Image (tube, rainbow, N blue to C red; front, top):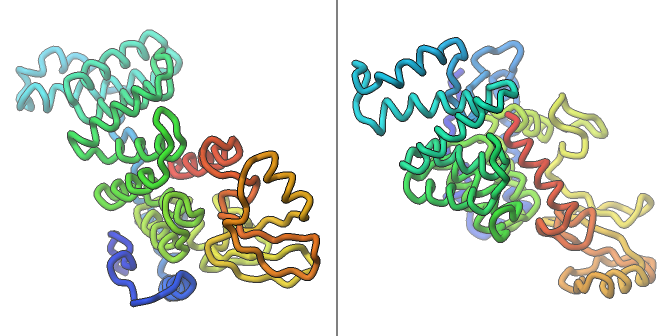
Length: 357
């Protein structure tokens, strides 16, 4: 069976007129339910070896450690090599591969890590695109003995995106904008950067995290249908976590976890709103709920200076209970954004899920 073509989710450019979020979600859900058996066959990691697509785990071109001595020798004579084309091609690519080996595969050898950092920095300063992105990662995380410098890391990634449309730099810059590390948090810009990486570079991690942003209403309106589309795209690109989440949504079993990637709390894209366990549930588009008494509501507004009147209340039989619609990301606390430590921790978890493919 031929695999589905991976590309921009089809609902981006072909929307029925005046279709609301719920109708759109049901239409897209029905479409993917019709492909469920096909997905299960294609994505069977154990029994279908062709399903094991290479995902964009970066860097992608680590050398075999046994080849390092020969590569180091080749660097010395690379201009005389029959493979030599120009100093910014063959020779610098060779240096870069040696550098990432020293940086990330040196088994605690600080001298080799320092050597790798110097090589990457030199290549980055001379405009090698992968090295620019990698040096940004080193600055952000403190690799190779570097002191962490997220602001300078963002400079590297921006420059690399502007100069080369470098896909991994788009993703890393999106992460920085999403978490507010090294740059002022900008959720809208983060979503745009993830979309660029997913569309232009078929970056499975970017597609995965974009799906989560659309589920949470981070940087864009909540759109469960489009979120499912991006998760399917990530799955088709080989992201095992996305595959698990999509299958969990399409064949949800109440109260049960789905495989090793997806627990029961993340198996549905439907939002269930109820004021307590005894009251009937109500499906709510684009929001989650919190339940507070009138007294608690006043105290929270006084303590956190947040106006909850932006959210429409749901009618409730009890006068002393207020059920407020709260965007999903605020389910644990009133007040979203990466400055909230609970929200930041949740976003970092999503980032790790997007990287662990």
